[in-house]
Length: 290
Image 1 (cartoon, rainbow, N blue to C red):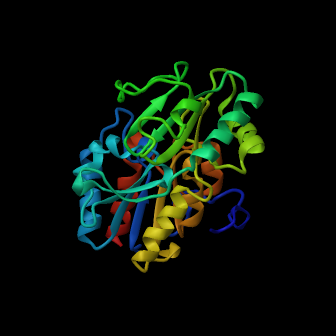
Image 2: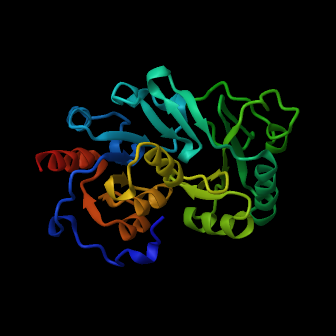
């Protein structure tokens, strides 16, 4: 991965930089990036994605979402049909209903160590466990409206070997705090439990996402690209939140959305319009126009 220190501290605005050469692969986040605020894909973006695939440019959706939340884009992935979900913990085939192709799990003993550390360092933290077959969470954890049937129990029970769904790999551990500032919570968690997993966040609230050590959007995307003989220099990536940072710094060309988190704006080489302005489609159209 290209070190962050190799990036300019103040990226030159997009309008003053030359357009990149035609890439071989486009990697894009979904929420806050490709999707509009109402979680839909605009007609302009649908057209741009299809045009990129027709031009021989592979498109990968790279998201923190689980496979079961991918219906919104499943009709718009072409060719390979693959998507990277759960911040790199799973590669799924959207042509086969989200069937897992590769899983990079968080070991349960590591997840339990994170739970123990955060209970001590940040009292009031509540947890959810995202497994390959669904999400399970504690009574205090904010419920997901998309998962009304989830099992509710203490995290220690949800991560126990005797849990009813223990055969499903853990993709992510989620930790929520109702009072701490999001970035402060992330910094604290990394300081007390960073040796047990990779911590990031994508929510405007203090909601952390914990993956296995070395598991990120960037590392899984790099593996998918290596399988295709595609180098980082041939990848254009789009994102808006801290869970996109490693991917954006790895890709040869990176775009921050106008609505991006300040850390993303500081780490990327280019800018594009907000997710509500079809910022991804604007760049794809420019690339295809040569």
